[in-house]
Length: 392
Image (tube, rainbow, N blue to C red):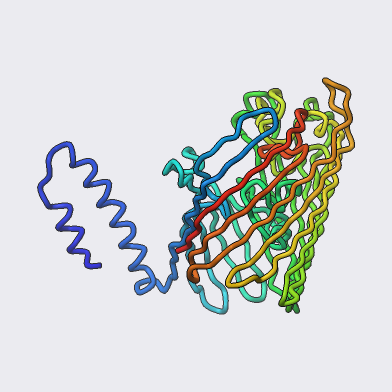
């Protein structure tokens, strides 16, 4: 598009109340024009991409009424992003990613305070040394193990109970991914502070540092992955010196007529990704929201397994998943033993084109809380959804 077009837009007379809107639009258009012009001028490849997903859903949680409405991100999260890569010579390159989640139902960012809440990193790499990334990103453990997932249904995928494989991101992180050697790849990541630093400082706490090591093998029909993650430098007086950790194993095999997947995890002393609901108030105040219930943080263990299969059927694909998590604690208020949680789903995806698909799924969870996996109320939840997913 010619730059003269933007000059004409800027110069065109408008009413005073429209001036602010005009210049905001021109600024955004100028940025896009610069992005489009980059490849020719700087030999940099920049890609704008995204996913828009919405579904009509019906959800019922035990003890409450059925809620019908519009669900944003039924098959996969709605998001948009920019990726860039520039050759530096000698087989090396520089790269970046800026990616933010979207709430399609409300027309708003997932996190208004953080427009690029999914990814915002810059890095360098080469074919012989691998890739180094700096910024907000997924841990290598999450990235490697979550690849076995069959159906990414919102709140009912592999991360429903295997929370270290759920869709979570970590701030202030440095990560490294090795080249692939005969299908084998190593990864390591470290966050200087993955928690809320401001809240921790106000409470006299310390940083939430998170380590992640991962290994995967991808060759032909096989995908194997393993990871270990652990948090450290937590407020010792708040958590009794315990460190949240998660070990994960995952595997999938594509037979052609079906793809089968299995996973296992052992999570201790809270959810390392801080994606277990709000959690106790005292840990929220210390910048440690999302570790899970107090019983889990206080020496608890949660062992989970995951089984899934996808089968081509007609022009689409039939997907089925089941996962189970066994907690080893009793609830403090009632003294009742925590129940085994189970999550199961059946779904079908029908492609309308290479980028657009229709889908439907039905899911059910027992002793399962959608926002935090395990909860003292140990509710049951059922959901049915029909939606549309398109990518650009």
